[in-house]
Length: 172
Image 1: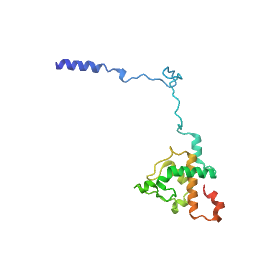
Image 2: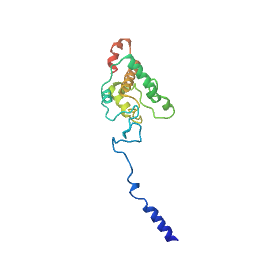
Image 3: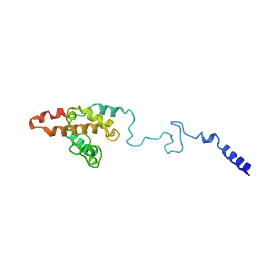
Image 4: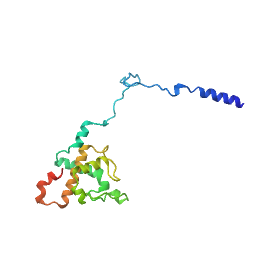
């Protein structure tokens, strides 16, 4: 009986031939009756950003001109993405900090007041410390808008009316 079972198992196992390792597939750009458009190449989903997107890389290199619209967009994006940790005022007392998450630095620390705008842009893009990267969540133009808004927050803490004309230059 054991011999019959062993032979039966051997027959079943020998049935697993090359067909298990060689699967049917379409070659790149081959015609395919399976899809309504007749091609095996599938269109990209909406909002896909190609790796190495030239326009996106150019947006990341040069900040846009500071305008009231850019600052308004920056405030909106800051409130959405940054305020949970940094707080609406930028002092590092956001809601997640109140719930036990590590406190981020205040934007009003001397080193961050002196830091170039690119420092904030890079932190948003690549993450910093326990902050994760927002590169896939926030478009480059919106990252620059957030940076401009952070600069506006910093300037607002100790600004006087006499300094108002130079404020546009310091936002960059």
